[in-house]
Length: 238
Image 1: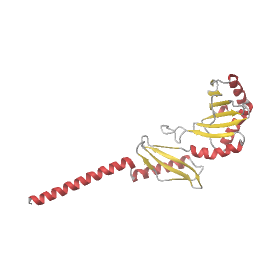
Image 2 (image 1 turned 135 degrees about the vertical axis):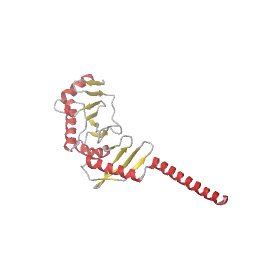
Image 3 (image 1 turned 120 degrees about the horizontal axis):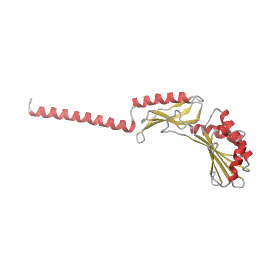
């Protein structure tokens, strides 16, 4: 083999080798930033199983997931087949191999008009606070439902009636929360908020509990026997 042919062959081998290395490097970079079809399909199947197991109130379609390389998770929009307004995101976290979601959107969408119908003159807003991301719960814990009202007065009996009726309506629809926050603003611009109250305390004895709380108006307090935080005047309704 003469030197010319050897040089051409060596150059060709080097070029092919460089091409292979660059291709592998490119695939590696693309996998970091965009994941790969095989991984996405595996995650997609896990997301579909997660939704089917935890949310049977509607027939949901989970769209093909997208990868967020910066935070290390996949996300997929999930939509009810019978109502496109009922939708939320499902997440798959690569660091712990778990799914969670922001189903809060669906709860707010479904429960807000129900509460508005029950309290046409008093209801102001409904919000959900959920533990997610680093939570080990599956699905995520619906920790708090925050419900805000505008009322004529802060009479204990009136507030207790609203809280009991709110809990009843929510549970009759098949939903439950770990704890509730209730915020009230009266027509004379006084405020009262009751935080972290468990469903077990929202009953007939609530009127007396609220009356005892109100003995220290303009005060942030802790009702020791129930573990309920409460405050007056300094809370706001936006």
